[in-house]
Structures are given as C-alpha cells and as structure tokens.
Amino acid sequence: MQADLVKRLFKAVSKGADKEILFSCKKIIEAERVKGHLVLAANLEKILESRLIAENDKSLATLPMSKRNNDPMVTIISHDELRHHMILNEEVDKRFRRVEKEFAARERLAKFGFSYKKKVLLYGPPGCGKTLGAERLAWNTGLPLVKVRFDAMISSYFGESAANLRNVFETVKKQPSLLFLDECDFIAKSRNLSNDVGEIPRIVNTLLQLLDDFNAPGLLVAATNLDKMLDKAIFRRFDDVFEVPIPTHIEILELLKTTLSAVETQPKLNWGVVSNKMVGMSAANIVSVAQNAAKTAILEGNKVVTQKDLELALNEIYSKDQQGELFHAT
Image (cartoon, rainbow, N blue to C red; front, side, top):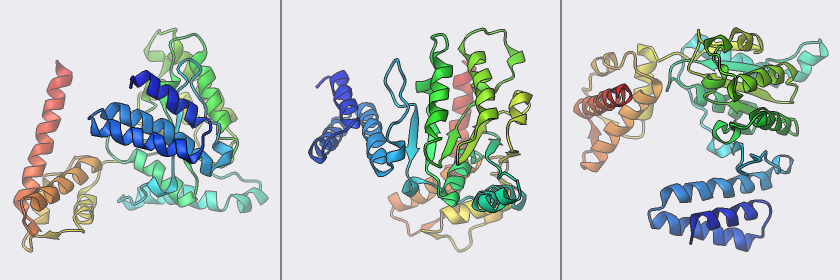
C-alpha cells in the first residue's frame, strides 16, 4: 500500500469514523511497524492520535490544520502522558510553584483586580528541563498541553505562517489549556540580527501582537535555548521569565538516585566521584547515564548496578557529544 494513500485514509478517519475503522487503522499501524516502516507508522499514529484525543475533549475537536499540507499544527498531550516529576534547586522550584499557585487562585485574585501569571518564558541550555517544566505546569494545573508544531506551521508563502499562528492561538480560546511554544529560538531571535524580509520577521511581529492580546483561559509557556539573543520586546510580553539551569552537584546526586531507585546499586558505590564527573551536564544526559548503566547491568544478568556501569555509561555520553560536535563542525 502506497504511503500517500495510507496517509490520505488516516486523515479522512481523523475527521470522523466509527470504531471498526479505527480498529482497522490501528492494525495497519502495527503491520507497517512490523515491516520496519517506523517513520510511516509514527506519522500514521500521530494523525490518528489527534482524533482520539479530540474525541475525549470535544472543545478541541477541531484542531488547527496547515492550509497547504493539511497537517495538524498542534499536538495534544493527554494527562496520562505528561511527565511531572522534576528535580530543581529550591529557587527555581519556587518560581514554578508560584505560577501553579496563582493559577489555582485565579478567581480569588480576580476579585481584587489582579490577574494570575498567564504567560511564562523558560530559557536555558538544551536538555535542562524546559519541556519537562511545561509538562509539570500542565499536570499541576490540570490543563491539557497543546504543543505547537512549528514544522507544520512555518511556510515560505507570504503571510501564511502568520495566519497559521493566529489559527493556533484562536484554538486555545475554546477551552482552558496550556499552549506550549517549544524551541521557539528561530522566531524569538532579535530582529536586529538579520535583514531577512521573509516569513520569520513577519511571524515574530505576529507573535508579539498575539502575546499582547493573549486572553485565553489557560496558560502560555514558551521555551528557548537562547537568553541574550532574545528580542527584548518578547521578554516584555511575558508575565514571568526565568532560567531552568543545569543541575548542581546536589541535583545530580538526586537525579542519579531517583533514576536508579527501581534497581539495586552497589553498596560501596562512590556517588561523590560519579556525580563530580557529571558537573556541567544537562539533566537529560544525567538521566540517560543512569538509565544506560541500569540497562547494562540488567542485560548482563547482574543483580546490582556498579560504579563501573555508571562510568562506562558516562564515557558513552561523552563520546556521543564529541561525535556530535565533529559532525556539526564538518
């Protein structure tokens, strides 16, 4: 079966179909995955998932679609799929808790003429937990997470990207939700850095206007790896802006022990030596080291995770990072 034909079938199903057809679609996904067509299976699953989630929330049933490619411009992450456990230093954790408390007390604040923190910008290096932070806020506020797909939204055609962005913002007015603008670096860079007269400057201006006018009944969270390069005009549009930093020595230890809590570790494991070698690493890499060490121990039939397992996993991460640097250098 041709990939284009299968996609067309799934898009038709996503607009309304009975349980029998949905069951058949799931079987097609399984068959494509067995054949090794993993990319196709993943694409089909996303199309179908948009419909299934929307069925549970009729107010978001009409998802904004790209006019040119007819692809969904947002992904809705269900409550059960949200990650919400974060290990942060006390100061950063307070900033998250403040956003959550204000949302919970929004009606009480409104009686005194105050508005809760509605627009939050998270910044920090890759892998530090910005996406996890957005998921945590959605979990603790009970809001569905609506994640913008910039790849489907951005177009080279005049004015189309701005129209797509407006469409997304209109969608979240229908029901309280957390609109998550992930990896918005390329639309958040200072307009002074380039003389580009294409769609990017146009969509930046549209974003500024939409942020000014944002009055949806939920939250808006944006995430970027940049800080100094961000357009100052964008900073001013947010009610709170704070960094999600890389873990300190204390958080590294807690991340390691929490990730390895399901397995047994060597009694004499020197946590201090291992964590010292991880200073400067992102939270994502630290978790990856712990997970790989645990999997190595399990695959080799060992009953405990040893210091050697952790150090080998750490060396693999360093090697992977070095290869990535070499790849981008060429």
